[in-house]
Image: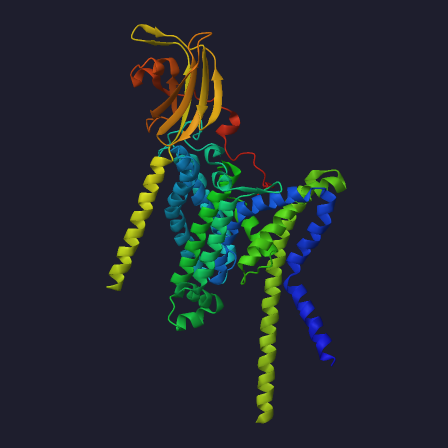
Length: 375
Length: 156
């Protein structure tokens, strides 16, 4: 009789332990929303806009997690590929939706190349994929800066003075994307109670979710899951582990490129040297806020995370300003929370892994003792 | 056989993507069209600016131009259509004219002179390329990346 309440307690404890980060964010948002004084319509409008802007980027993180490669900090590489494509498309003066589609097509070869490099390097650093991909993103950022700052306009033809630096080569700090600004968001957009819903963008995101669900059921998707669970077992089953891991990173990089283009068409301008620098960090933080972990993430985590994380982004500066009289406190708050969430999620993942190892060890010891007793 | 089929499929996919890219390249070319109501000198003859020109693009009134005035419109693709409601001299009855222009692919900015167009002059007389003056150099633009925060705090 007393077992039932005990099991309920254990379930509640396990639920709390598994969902610490989302619960923490729900509490933060619940406290900050009334203090910020924003109207529900304003908050809804902002969240829908930001969901449309960021969800595709966050979705690009799911496939490497499926393949057991953890959180792909290397998605920044895809973002850089998307930016290079946008610079070319801006220079060719291709505007509107054709511009976005062309940028996506142009980004693919860059993303594939960068994904291949990243995948190959990550295969050399098995078990340390996250830190390696993080450092690779810094390395490729250096190459990107070299190309954009010195090669574009000198070796790589760039015609337009509005994009080029006045010295004749290199790209300006900001490239205007005004002629493709929100072209996808505004097409088929509907207004419900003062809230603008970018229907086409959300349809693209929904389509991407369906593709991910379908992909999980394909042979390659199954292979990735097998590799993610146990590389040795997958190899014994005849799966080419290295190739599967590379493909997962290439797909993630290509999707990140598309996501970055969607993100920048919403913003309407490209900060050439810094737009990509924080994208990986913020997307990973958003995914973790949604309850994902290093080895497990779902589409639900993407949407819950994007909603909670961006809700915090919207209300924290205003709440900070109301409480302390200084909006910078709120700004700092949201930055340290972003980094803090990643740290917390990584620590919790390690703790969970150790707990699992200890439990397996205990079970083995128990089985051994049982065996010895029988003998 | 299977491998051959896979390669054919890949080739076809690549071809389709390249065709889509080509189509986007053509249909997505953006232009800025400047519509001028200025007196035009051509072959020693003068074509006077109109008293008043109302410019309509895509069903919306873009501008009402007086003498020596200019308006602009952006267009995606190589064809541009506008409706002009012209008053040649003060007190005249306004006349309406729909103008369809084929835009040169290579020109970003295109100046269309209304008096020249209405006078039936050849295209090179009333259509010219708009070349903007280079922007003044600022120190900030010369040194990208310098002075950025160590930890960027930008919104996303």
